[in-house]
Length: 194
Image (cartoon, rainbow, N blue to C red):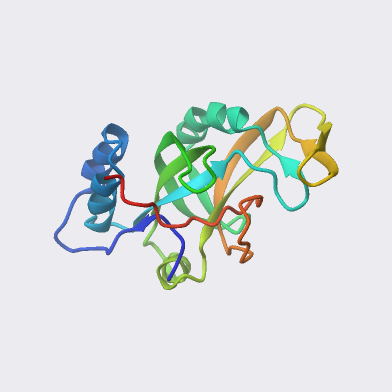
């Protein structure tokens, strides 16, 4: 079992990508979004691109910075890469700002597509469907020096990476963390919104 929120079943007869995007953008009903994605004709999935947490290296990207980058990310084509490499395998089609149901913190939910243009795309899609790849991670750079703060929870200095500029979202293998203080957030299935 994988930890992506919703994955399409790649149906020959099903919803077009435009129809799924419309459901995703206009519905806050997660069951409705799930049904739309699972009945998509293309390779679509919904993932938490980022949540306001501190990672294992005690680094935090302010969620406000990530949120502010989403329109720019889409304007630049919304590249989805394989594991922060130069291998472009997909595209972010839409995003929503929502509370992560487990972390109870603000997050960025993406609707992404995996291309079907070559054997490498097929390999990555297979890794998502099989559960080998289970998470997403934002990639970018910062244009401000980091701010160091004392983290009461860990008892360590936390490096806050302000001025974050996102240039990609990567499909990654989750590090099997059971904690939500990871930059590779486990993308656990959403509970029913009923």
